[in-house]
Image 1 (cartoon, rainbow, N blue to C red):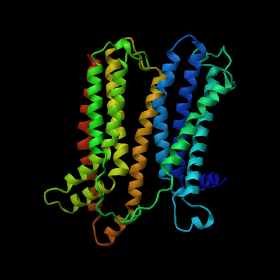
Image 2: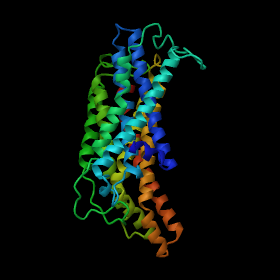
Image 3: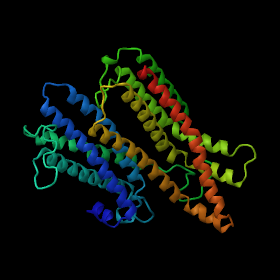
Image 4: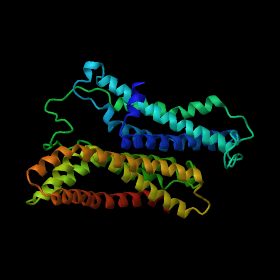
Length: 386
């Protein structure tokens, strides 16, 4: 009940984020149900298992977005005095997990209704039974299997939220999010991320020499190459996500090099302070963009492949969740800078200084991550395009 009351009294922007989580959950749940429908219509085929395995990508993207939204929820942020009325960090964590589960469950129910409508089980609306043959409408739907698949997104998302927001002991000298930044230590994942990135590209290059028919096919029927290429893609994506915070921190250091002025100094310090907050979502967006480029190259070279509606839906869920996660992290970073910006304004800093620093930060990140993304995408697509 407390989670529902907090959701009802939340800010409209917070409600919009939760509705977007529900929409992502609906898209992922619908993909799971479509895989079930394919299995019902083709009981002797192994294609259903492959389709179900590919649903892991939108599942991971939806859970990642749901955790990011839960992190930025102001209604469940620990504040002084809440522990006295029984709302300590542990209770707020449970509220956040419950709110995430409610939003994802709402999306799963929408997916079930839409699935039943396209099968023709629900009538009275346009497009009744429009996909009856594709979704095996002539066979009874196993309700237990459908509900189990639909429960995956709420269950995994709520558990991931609880793990991400679990209470941690306060570290000495750690400043509150709303306080003015001091120079922060560099993120420690940059060497590991570079190693994963290099290992992923090496695995792709080595596995690309094998026969393309030896591996699973991608959505749309395109030959995705041997399984080692997919492992290389996964390592490359994780490497980009891990290197994101470190590269953002380095970008902030470069901005302050060689006798910086006030604008470059402010832009660099902010990037260093927010490296962990926006670096990882930025790396994930780069990983999704490079994967999209590599996949488009494969679809362009395979004349027998086609991009169907389910493939498009899965791509939209993955790309949309990645971009929305980055937008959420950026908005939260802007909110935490309001106190610092107000202090600078009271000291006489012109508004053009703050806007120029923001523009400089965006330009620096684009100048660093755009060529990196293009290079990784080109190298990832090379073994499969030949």
